[in-house]
Length: 317
Image 1 (cartoon, helix red, strand yellow):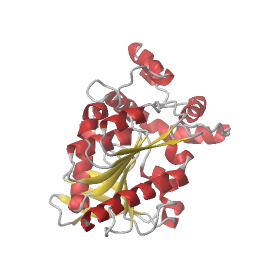
Image 2 (cartoon, one colour; image 1 turned 30 degrees about the horizontal axis):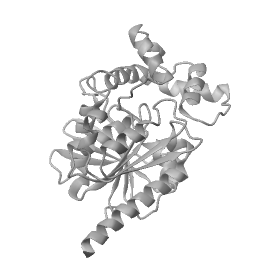
Image 3 (tube, helix red, strand yellow; image 1 turned 90 degrees about the horizontal axis):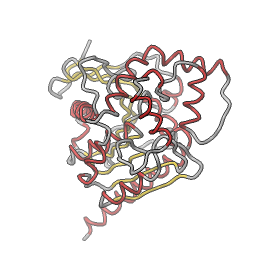
């Protein structure tokens, strides 16, 4: 069933044709690739060309399709790759997997090698947990990445904790791990999570909340395990510890009303990363990709153009 590709110990397979209509409508195709006994699931559009390929890393408990709202506004001539992060959706979930931020960065590197995505340096984008992994990836594998977009990334050490983090610490101390606000198991908790993650207040019908929870419940034990891993001492501040090693042009995008990860993190990154530009979005919370997809896409395209053009200018000197 697996066709061996030229990449060593990696193999590739075409997914079934039942991918959702909207993914197809945007021209995204789903594939699986294997590294030894580990399977990655990803979607892609286009093929490598003159412009850098773009690899997109989603946040905690999401999956590759969370990027579709942004993909919709990205030019068709860009080569896009959205991967399911370790243990999420179609990518292998294994109790033996190292889910620390370091472990996830290493897994993503295996994926990149399998796809030969780093034949030419690519643009890496990550949001929240995916932003944490993306930043650490750029520090660990500098020759893979030509530029970086971090959308409200986790992994920074703040001088004061916001309400959300204070609440988390209280839950950790009381060992009430079943109460983590980002892991809802009732419609009410689902509603609270949506309010926490977005600035716009919208009323979601009970039936839909129930449906959203039903989809998540079978995965909640995994989400708890992952969450405790990424907030552990080993992982919590990985981006902070590595941000001064990021040498590529970097773009930070953050919602000013983010209640999960405070927007002041943007300034911390800008002070540590030499070539860095910051875009703060008004009336926007933590779910930047969902709340402001058109704006996010435009910022990414403009940033790539500016980085790309300065490179061209250098060649002219």
